[in-house]
Length: 123
Image 1 (cartoon, rainbow, N blue to C red):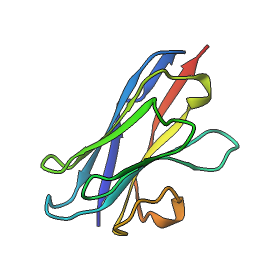
Image 2: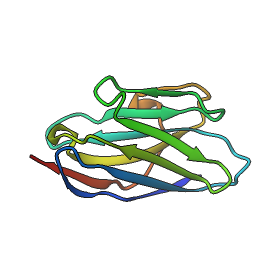
Image 3: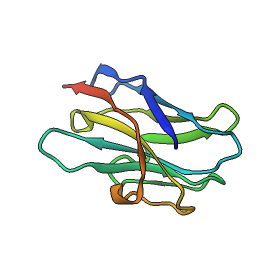
Image 4: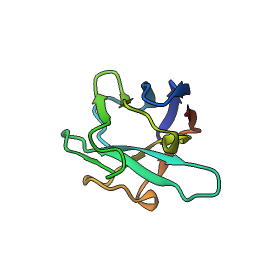
């Protein structure tokens, strides 16, 4: 069982930046593929970025070049640095974990989810 807790959301203006953090309650030797998802009202949950246990990453096309995912295995934390934010980035952002050892941005591949943190970008 893995518990995930997100933090770092907030409200910024277009062009601003935020850094989201996810703390995972698991043993440091356990390895999971981690990801950030987001969901705006009325829309499906969308995969934003994912990172494999050994560090490979993948991004949604809409955020590539603006967002950076990283992890600190010693501290069991996952981060998402978000730069050049746009109003369309406004959503609830979720941290997720899966024991599948490959990169995936499909929500159904993830077993563990956090409660989410709200990001609002105003124009």
